[in-house]
Length: 408
Image 1 (cartoon, rainbow, N blue to C red):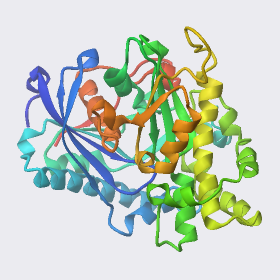
Image 2 (tube, rainbow, N blue to C red):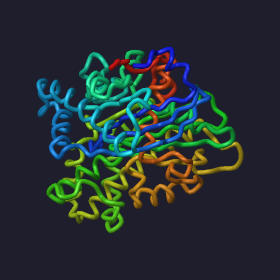
Image 3 (cartoon, one colour):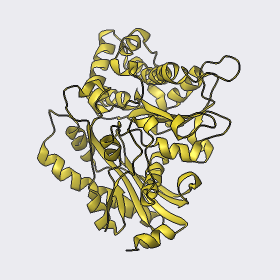
Image 4 (cartoon, rainbow, N blue to C red):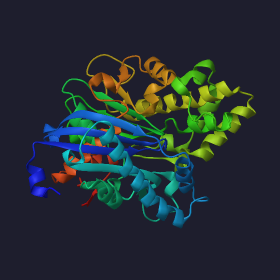
């Protein structure tokens, strides 16, 4: 294994970022060439693969995310099993792209979140004394199986300092996208949707970020229920495009306390998971909506929660320099699985008429790989002793070096 000081002297490093999100559809692996550190960071995506989980794994993970179906022995075993799957994702990605293991300097692994209790202002945490979070995918297994230095478990340091532990992508977002003349929004629509706002010519302290609410999570759950498990998502938003949203239900759902909370705030399956989705679907059926209308209504909920967040927490305090406009974001880059939902993308363009809404691919960063790239960057920053969180985004009391180092 290369000595730490030799690794630090390298101007260019090859880092693998690993990510599995709340959609629980597989492991993203991004091989990234990173030059420099901090504000001098530059990235070049060498390879990217999404490795689907074995057929039984998504349901096993989802069972761990529910207190009434989770068992401590299952969590213990799955922590190591997911570690092996992450390591296998690294091996397959390198083999498929003809990259030798010895060419990789570092792995940054987000792991798989199974429970997230960020504390106040998250109303789901009122009965818990200590804010906490749990990601599985044992980094010692990844490091051993690949022979590569691994940094993982990035959220906990921020939470130890009083932060929400998310969104951690805000710091990489700033390094890659801050603009001297335009305010840039980075919207990632995974299971949960999160937004980073980078004010024009702003500093680290000017960045704001939060989860806006459900992204694909409720639509995916409803699709599985409607099709008896045959379809797990609304491909390209086709069903939503054929349906008509029922606004009275959306208005009712928008009264959920989470949407009223100011940032920083985070959420997950604990709040908007299967139970919430089934309640929404039941309400749709109570109002005699067709299946396509139900999917359209849940899809529109995602769009309107994003719009509500921006109107309440971004537009206020961020007025345009001249004239009047609907919101202060000049460019809204979209990433995550939601970028492939044409109905979502069309509706975002219709809602944000004063904003350029486009896939983040147009900036030169892959929309599918963006989150995995972010954790490669965070690993590189931690290696150099650089803090990787932004207190203005997470609510932490101080900036922190993130992650736990595991040698092979």
